[in-house]
Image 1 (cartoon, rainbow, N blue to C red):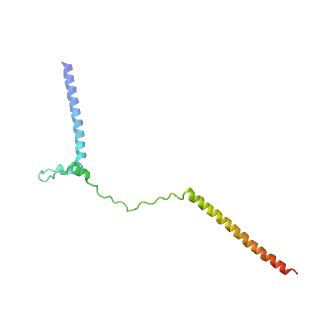
Image 2 (cartoon, helix red, strand yellow):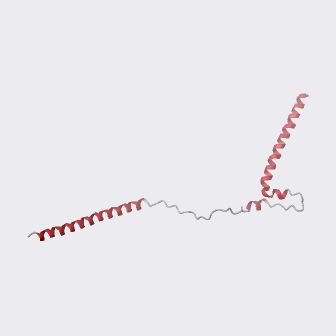
Image 3 (cartoon, one colour):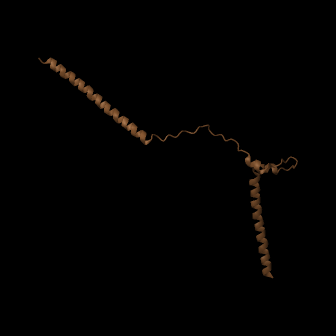
Length: 123
């Protein structure tokens, strides 16, 4: 007989704990479901209590605009392609070669002038 009583007490306590846990999760679900409408739903005067919005309308409502700075996305430049780099190097090399040739030409012209002056100066 004592064993039956013990089983009965354990079953009652287990049912009580399970009921409390279920009620706790039901309350959490209601708070999440009702959200901002909870204060209006719990109003004391039932005449002033507005009807709750349906779930679909509540879900479709857009959030208020946030104060974000109005900046357009910046264009991301990854730099020149390999072909463009090669062309730039070739162009720079050609410019260096033409500068060297121009310097040689100017020195050659100066040397010719000096030689011609020496030839005219000597009798």
